[in-house]
Image (cartoon, rainbow, N blue to C red; front, side):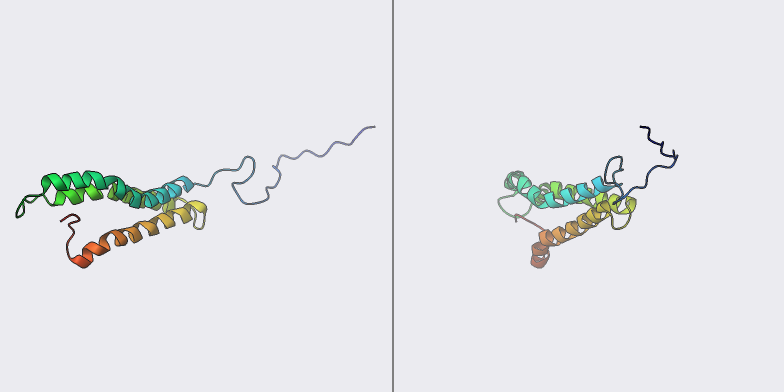
Length: 139
C-alpha cells in the first residue's frame, strides 16, 4: 500500500485562539511592568506598618521637652519614606505599562489599576492630616 504525498507549502499553518497563547506564542509586552505596578501599589499600606517602629524612635529622640526645635519633620520623613518610594515606583511602572502595551491588553489593564490604586491610597493616608490642618503624624 502506498499513500499519496501531501502537497508541500511554504506558509505556516493558521493560528487559532488568542495571540500569545499556545506553543510558540509570544508573551504580551509590558505585562510584567503592569503586574509590578499593582504589587507596588498594594504594598504601600503594609509598608507603613514596617516604618512605624523606626518612626516612633525618631519621634522619641527628636521631640523636645518644651516648645519646638525644628526637627518635627524627621518623624514624618521616616514614616512616609518607604510608602512614598513604593508609590512612585508603582506610578512609574504603571506609566510604562500603559505606554508600551496595546490598549485593553493585560499589561495595560494592570498598569491602569496600579495608576488608580496609588492616588486612592494617598487620599486615604493624607485625608486625616488635611482635615486636621497639619501634617505632623506624631505631634
